[in-house]
Length: 145
Image (cartoon, rainbow, N blue to C red):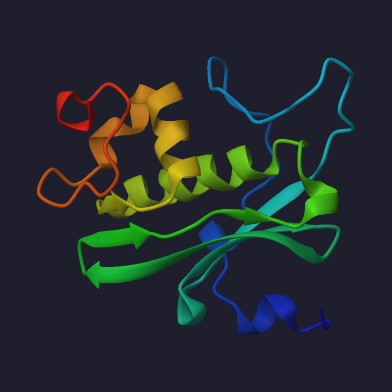
């Protein structure tokens, strides 16, 4: 990453402050031991159609999307660099991505199983799923059985 990274990417809400997961939200922290806190900045790289999680100036996770229309994004696949897994970064990336999408009034089509699982665990985000083009169905869906 070069020093002009922030200058050439569209930053989500100009820079979201690092925040702990909201009360009641599921996260992807694994193991029984304490996890070192991570300061995560989430950036919407619109020209690349990617929400990226940046830690200490390094892009460590991404959630690519396709703008299917002006009102709907298709969320493709969440990925986290292996050395950063298990620290809640994917959860924070997904949460902030969904919060940003909500703030724009858009809906989503979910093709990423990790995003689908997050929404299943956090049903307060289910309203973002486009009713005509939902993508992967939630585990509670009768059509998924």
